[in-house]
Length: 122
Image 1 (tube, rainbow, N blue to C red):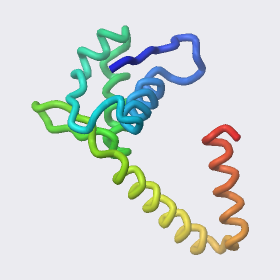
Image 2 (cartoon, rainbow, N blue to C red):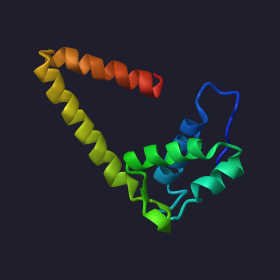
Image 3 (tube, one colour):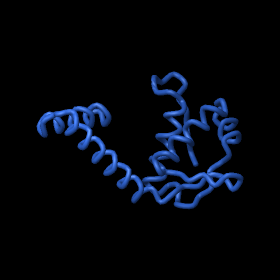
Image 4 (tube, helix red, strand yellow):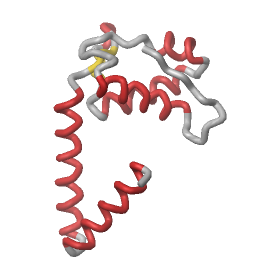
Protein backbone atom coordinates (compact mmCIF):
# COMPACT_ATOMS: atom_id res chain seq x y z
CA UNK A 1 0.00 0.00 0.00
CA UNK A 2 1.47 3.30 -1.12
CA UNK A 3 0.33 6.41 0.74
CA UNK A 4 1.79 9.89 0.77
CA UNK A 5 0.91 12.77 3.06
CA UNK A 6 1.28 16.37 1.99
CA UNK A 7 1.69 18.26 5.26
CA UNK A 8 1.38 21.58 3.41
CA UNK A 9 -1.99 20.74 1.81
CA UNK A 10 -5.24 22.26 2.99
CA UNK A 11 -6.72 18.75 3.18
CA UNK A 12 -6.29 17.27 6.68
CA UNK A 13 -3.97 14.25 6.93
CA UNK A 14 -6.75 11.86 8.04
CA UNK A 15 -8.72 12.76 4.90
CA UNK A 16 -5.64 12.22 2.72
CA UNK A 17 -5.22 8.74 4.22
CA UNK A 18 -8.94 7.97 3.87
CA UNK A 19 -9.13 9.16 0.26
CA UNK A 20 -6.02 7.29 -0.87
CA UNK A 21 -7.06 4.00 0.73
CA UNK A 22 -10.60 4.35 -0.64
CA UNK A 23 -9.32 5.03 -4.16
CA UNK A 24 -6.85 2.12 -4.03
CA UNK A 25 -9.61 -0.20 -2.79
CA UNK A 26 -12.04 0.93 -5.53
CA UNK A 27 -9.41 0.58 -8.26
CA UNK A 28 -8.42 -2.90 -7.11
CA UNK A 29 -4.88 -1.86 -6.19
CA UNK A 30 -5.80 -3.04 -2.69
CA UNK A 31 -7.56 -6.38 -3.22
CA UNK A 32 -10.62 -7.43 -1.25
CA UNK A 33 -9.55 -9.18 1.95
CA UNK A 34 -6.13 -7.53 2.15
CA UNK A 35 -5.17 -6.92 5.77
CA UNK A 36 -4.23 -3.28 6.34
CA UNK A 37 -1.41 -2.26 8.67
CA UNK A 38 -2.35 -1.62 12.28
CA UNK A 39 -3.23 1.95 13.18
CA UNK A 40 0.02 2.35 15.10
CA UNK A 41 2.17 0.83 12.36
CA UNK A 42 0.67 3.00 9.63
CA UNK A 43 0.84 6.12 11.81
CA UNK A 44 4.52 5.48 12.47
CA UNK A 45 5.23 4.81 8.79
CA UNK A 46 3.51 8.05 7.72
CA UNK A 47 4.76 10.19 10.60
CA UNK A 48 1.24 10.83 11.88
CA UNK A 49 -0.49 10.55 15.24
CA UNK A 50 -2.27 7.23 15.82
CA UNK A 51 -5.57 9.09 16.32
CA UNK A 52 -5.24 10.55 12.81
CA UNK A 53 -4.98 7.11 11.22
CA UNK A 54 -7.68 5.73 13.54
CA UNK A 55 -10.07 8.44 12.31
CA UNK A 56 -9.33 7.56 8.69
CA UNK A 57 -9.97 3.86 9.41
CA UNK A 58 -13.26 4.68 11.23
CA UNK A 59 -14.48 6.74 8.27
CA UNK A 60 -13.44 4.03 5.81
CA UNK A 61 -15.37 1.50 7.86
CA UNK A 62 -18.43 3.77 7.99
CA UNK A 63 -18.23 4.04 4.18
CA UNK A 64 -18.01 0.26 3.79
CA UNK A 65 -14.52 0.37 2.29
CA UNK A 66 -12.90 -1.64 5.09
CA UNK A 67 -14.08 -4.05 7.76
CA UNK A 68 -12.62 -4.20 11.25
CA UNK A 69 -12.40 -7.60 12.89
CA UNK A 70 -11.17 -6.71 16.37
CA UNK A 71 -7.82 -8.30 17.13
CA UNK A 72 -7.75 -9.89 13.67
CA UNK A 73 -7.28 -6.44 12.15
CA UNK A 74 -8.78 -4.35 9.40
CA UNK A 75 -9.30 -5.70 5.89
CA UNK A 76 -10.42 -4.28 2.57
CA UNK A 77 -14.13 -4.97 2.05
CA UNK A 78 -15.94 -5.72 -1.17
CA UNK A 79 -16.54 -1.98 -1.54
CA UNK A 80 -18.15 -1.81 -4.96
CA UNK A 81 -21.53 -3.16 -3.91
CA UNK A 82 -21.56 -1.52 -0.48
CA UNK A 83 -20.55 1.88 -1.89
CA UNK A 84 -23.50 1.85 -4.27
CA UNK A 85 -25.81 0.61 -1.51
CA UNK A 86 -24.71 3.40 0.84
CA UNK A 87 -25.08 6.02 -1.90
CA UNK A 88 -28.59 4.81 -2.75
CA UNK A 89 -29.59 4.82 0.92
CA UNK A 90 -28.24 8.36 1.38
CA UNK A 91 -30.10 9.53 -1.73
CA UNK A 92 -33.36 7.99 -0.52
CA UNK A 93 -32.94 9.56 2.90
CA UNK A 94 -32.29 12.96 1.31
CA UNK A 95 -35.31 12.70 -0.97
CA UNK A 96 -37.61 11.76 1.91
CA UNK A 97 -36.31 14.61 4.05
CA UNK A 98 -36.62 17.17 1.26
CA UNK A 99 -40.22 16.07 0.72
CA UNK A 100 -40.99 16.38 4.46
CA UNK A 101 -39.48 19.89 4.43
CA UNK A 102 -41.79 20.91 1.61
CA UNK A 103 -39.02 21.41 -0.95
CA UNK A 104 -40.18 21.00 -4.55
CA UNK A 105 -38.74 18.25 -6.76
CA UNK A 106 -36.87 20.82 -8.89
CA UNK A 107 -35.42 22.54 -5.81
CA UNK A 108 -34.34 19.20 -4.35
CA UNK A 109 -32.63 18.20 -7.60
CA UNK A 110 -30.94 21.60 -7.86
CA UNK A 111 -29.58 21.20 -4.33
CA UNK A 112 -28.18 17.76 -5.25
CA UNK A 113 -26.57 19.10 -8.43
CA UNK A 114 -24.90 21.89 -6.46
CA UNK A 115 -23.68 19.53 -3.75
CA UNK A 116 -22.26 17.10 -6.33
CA UNK A 117 -20.52 19.93 -8.19
CA UNK A 118 -18.94 21.14 -4.96
CA UNK A 119 -17.91 17.62 -3.87
CA UNK A 120 -16.52 16.55 -7.24
CA UNK A 121 -15.05 19.90 -8.16
CA UNK A 122 -16.94 20.73 -11.34
